[in-house]
Length: 168
Image (cartoon, rainbow, N blue to C red; front, side):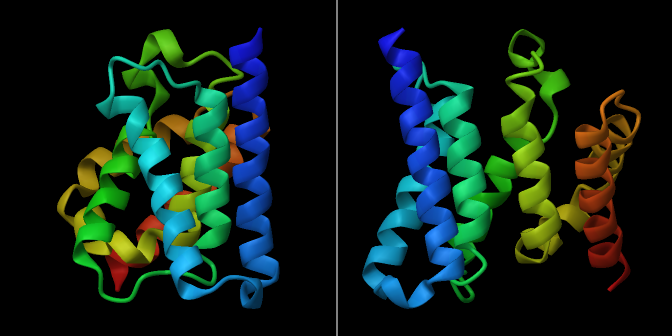
């Protein structure tokens, strides 16, 4: 369908822009980097904040992957509001079992991408992870008990970051 094609196009666009900002940060002004980061965050949030417009999990997967790459060079410094929103996004996309109607194998990519984002950037939200450590421990254990390698790997990486943050 046309909607699915658009979602794949925007997914690829977010992934490409995230990759460029990771590999070639000098190509982005601070304003453009902030604008891109905000667009990715707004897209991720739109999935659970805007009931009127159905947003594809394919698009969300691309926005999460793009954001993860983007944050390698463009992490806001001491931005409590950003960290709070990021944590909210992490929570919403960490456990596909909380959304059984949306947990098909193809839709798990968005959740898996979020776990990889947590493994790379969990330090930004360490206080939130610590406050809710029991929830996160359960979520990561669920991923570790998955039948697929990709799910288990994302679970291992994010759990390592989680335990490192808790320990420090």
